[in-house]
Amino acid sequence: MKMPEYEMMRKHVFEQLESNLDYRLYYHGIHHTKNYVLPAVEHLAYLENIKGESLILLLSAAVLHDIGYIEKYENNEIIAASIAEELLPKFTYTSKQIELIKAMIMATALPQTAKTLSEKIICDADLCHFGADNFITISNSLWRELIEFGYNISKDQWNEDTLNFLNTHSYWTDTASIEWNKQKAVNIRRLSEQIKNKL
View (cartoon, rainbow, N blue to C red):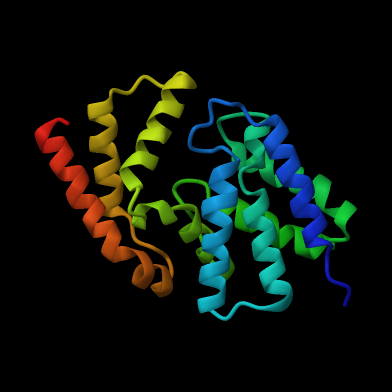
């Protein structure tokens, strides 16, 4: 079976993200996909022994998962899936492959709804920053972004909501839990202290 033209597709999508994403996307800018989600997907896929066509489709979904932000801030996953459906045939993806990619993209919408292993991996990768040592900085960038896009939420409320989310969140895969839960626990403590001290 002929493999889809993933490298060409990735290059095209990154050019689109670079050119067309709103500069106010302090969190959801191209860096989120390029520097966090895609490397995290590659890392988890390697540890989960995802190879061949399954790996290409998973990487493709990671590349495309936030392209909907080019058009609209809310409900961007639906837009991303629609863009994927239109774009991917140009890079020799089959209808069946496109449906799998669309399902992976849609799984990342909160609350996440992962069913397959690939969907679980992309969902975990999308929230890999929960287990990053610069979590507080990343979280602050998302709050700034939400303010820019008209959300009325104080910094104190944001921290409280984020802490609640962290405390109720679980990674889908054991691999992600092993990789990131230790630092995630540190981040929960740091955020709790920040709230307590109102820093």
